[in-house]
Length: 203
Image (tube, rainbow, N blue to C red; front, side):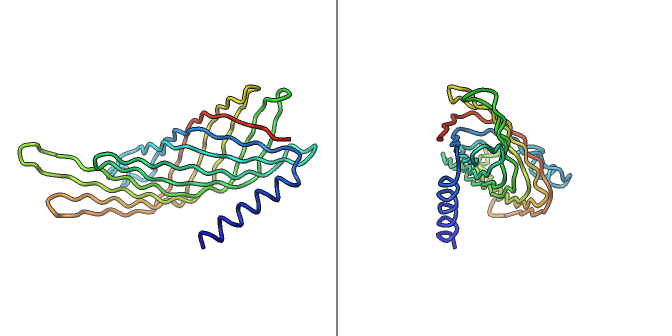
């Protein structure tokens, strides 16, 4: 199934590139802040989830058209001394080009977004009793979103990420002294973030 999906995405990108007048590749870093809307979730894990990641975005436009197609993905992998962060996400949909010069302008890319985030950490709650606390948080989401990016003539790109996920599943597990407490909840969440990167245009 995974190979089937990857193959079709690559074929779609190749097809769009062959019929397009110009394509834009953007790569960089995201810093997203996800706000939990459900009170039970906020009480359990807090109001905010921080999601740093790297991203790649592809936008393609036909000749003399400012409306095109985009697909982008982001991911993060981090592990150090029991602290873990693993996440993947993707968005697909139309894109809109607003030129402000020969090689600069805005690209607005709304679409359907989906992904997951897994974090875990271990810490000593009390150094005298050596009590260990292990926490694992899993988040899976499906929703809608948009990115608003401005690319300069140099290729430098800054942008804003906005996402609303009415289908967000959260699972939190806390283990102390071999006793595990779990919390599972379906809720909605809002994500706001900033991005920095570099854009290359192919015509």
